Structure formats: C-alpha cells, structure tokens
Length: 533
Image (cartoon, rainbow, N blue to C red):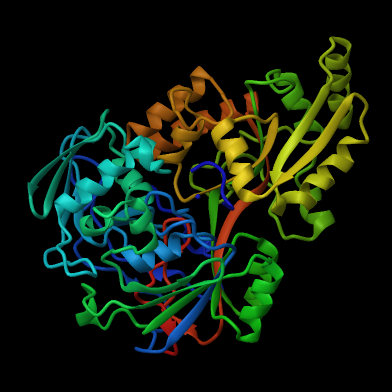
C-alpha cells in the first residue's frame, strides 16, 4: 500500500539495536525454511514478550480514525489504522516476525514451496472455526483471495491477489500457483493476504460483511458507534481458548484524531494503548509509559510525479534535494524525526551507506533552478499533502523561498481527498508520501517497478527493474542485499523520491498493560495483550 497515515525479511533483522523499546518486543520461535526455498512450516504459536497478561478485564485502544469497513478488502491494513482491528477479528494466516525476518504460521500450519516459488502449499490448522461456528478451511481462503480480484469489490489488495491459480486439495490444503515464480510469495501473504473472512458473511455482500464481520480471531464485534468507537468481546470458541486466550474479556477501540490528545489520554489512564508513527510521542513514552518500537523501510518523503512537469526533469528533482536538509525537520520542529539517508532506514540489513541522497548544496541547487528557468522550465509546483503534514510542508516552503526561480504551493487535503487525488487520479506534481515496510518485498516492487499497476509516480528505470526482479527471485540474504543495494543506487541517482525522515512505528501503552507482541509493521497480536501480569 503506497501512502499511509491513511503500510519479511530473510536476513536477521530488528535485533537488539532495532528494538528501541522500554519493553522488549518478543521472544520468537525458531522456524526452519523448507530445503528448496522460502516458506514457513513451524506449527507452534509464538510466545508473547514480557509478563503474561492476566485473564479477564477490559482494555481501551485509541486510533486516529474510525474504520470505513472491517473486512479484509477495504480496511486499512496498517498499525496506526485498522490492522489491530483486523487482528482482533480475523487473526493472521501467517505473519512476518520482525525479530528475525521470517514468515511464521498462525492460523496456518505452514506455507511452503518445493520448487523455488513456482508453486506453494498452504496447510491450515485443523479444528479452527469462524466465530459463527462455520469451518475455517481452504475453501474460505480461496474465496477471500478470489474476492480481492473482483473489480466491483475495489479491494486495496487486488494487485497482490491477481493472477493466482488456486486449487483446494482437501479441506485443510490449498495449492497455489503465482502468475510468475516467486520464492518470496510467503512475504506477500503475510503482509497483504493474511486476513480471511467467513464465506457465510461474504455471501451477504461486502457492505454487510464490512459492517458485521465474521472471522476466526480472538474477538467478535459487539457494537459499533460510527465515528466514535467499536466494542469487541471475547470469542468463546477461539481456536486457542485452551491456552487461556484471548486474555481480555472486552476490547474497545476509540477514534481520537489529535495525536497529543491520544498521548495524554493514555498517560492519564483514560485509555490503555495507542499505535503511533511520531517519534516525539514514542520518545516521551520511553520515559513516562511503555513502548514497543520498530524502525521500518520507507520513511516520510516527497514523491515526485515523473509524468508531469516540472519533475519529469531530473534537474528539478535534484534541485529540490539539494535545496533542502532532512536534519532541519527535527531541529526546527522538534518532532524527533530521524533524518534519512535514502529509502532504507540506516539499521536495515539492506541499507547501503554508499547510496546516500545528495547532501544539501544551496549553490548547486540555485544553479539548477536558474538553468531550468532560462529554458522556460521554472520549478513552479503544488505540493499535495494530507492535513497531518502541514508543519513539515510549511518548513520546506519557507526554505525554498530563499531561492530564485522556484515556487511551491501547499495543497492540504483530508485523508479521503488525498488518497483520491494521489493514489487514484494520480493528479499531482509532488506529494507527501510515507510507507511502513517491514521488508522490501512485496511492496517495493509494487511501488517502483515500471510494470507494477501500483507504481504511483511513473518512475521507469531499467536498473531499478532489474534490481527489484533479482531481489524477488531469491531468498538468499546475500543476493537480496546486493540487489537492494543496486536499487538504492538507482534511486539516489534518479531521485523519484526525496526522503527526509526514517519510518518508525510503535505501540505506546500504560504500565498496567502486558503481553504486548507485535508483528508485520507493528500490528498487535490481540489475543495475548491484556492487563496486569
């Protein structure tokens, strides 16, 4: 998913330096990949980090906005939006364990390949039921994945499910053939196709399924006050009930748009936890509350539209990069942002320190602005952002006003209008952009490959395409690292984006909360979080 406030790794990742948290992220289970390629076949569930929560009680979580719907097709599957809700209702089939970068099973017993990604086998756990008592089986997985591809459903995951050939072998086994061999297909499933809705709910239509969801997760939706809150109660037939899960009797998720209000509410005990992508709040929580924090690939950046002037000219993109300094954002605004070197965060095992964005050089920037103006190509553009990015945009505008022959206007939109203009219409010159990626696959291929329908800014670079294809074709850490180094070199040379802050996300929670364990890009296993312990 491209832009997110509304976002899989083979080499070791998120080890001690990565877990910037007052509470450790998680104890992980070892998972051996299949001998012939990537995959997950560990049949045990992961253990929660820290003290185990007590059984019973209720917990309140805050979110920036209410959900549009609670189905796997239109909900926003990121930690600061709907993914905690999806986790509560559905549970993941498989998930990406951020501590070691491997895909691991949850509702599934395994997702494996024996032919380097040409075909895959999904094995489901026996005895799992949806919350309405119907069977969680291979037919249900097949139906959900097929519904992603139907244009009328407008699924945000449509491109990820497209081209799959699915065959039910038996009630617990699904044979999968991707449209092209993909040794990293399990990473795609973990981050894009991991939530499955009951066929009994889907049969009533997506409007009904999104309002009255039926999953196999630890909770059932009890009530929904639109624009305000959702109340979830324990699923009495949860597949892990013999392990005392879920811990909570009730989970309430309330919409609070103001980030400062979110933080102060948790600090005062008016709520128990909140997901945040703003370092200033995560840093405060380390001193005053508890936090589990991840650094991720993507960062906050300017996305240039290479299909339109002025940024169809590399000189215009380079001039902006030379004119601005990422370090000024946290220095002036005090928001705790970590200045970025490129699209990959600096603690990623894929980060190439030799592939750094150009450092600020005001003289060189002015030369480029003047050169373009002399050719009748003045850098005059509108910067399209969501309303949450106004302060940073205003700072950038003030800095660009120090130069001749460049003009920047700020167009601040609400989230829905931004997504429509940026993601759907693609009618922008430059736009605010953020991704939260636990692994480069599958999203970087989707964002930057010239053949991808999700390539938002029209970047076409043969070297980047080759690097993305090479990385997708291998699970070997060394091969992937080399391929992504080549990608970073192409990105800093061509500048389809200019990254000013590294990406981070964390769960902020009160001192009475325990059993916090995250997966993918910071989502919570809602079955084991609770109070006490």
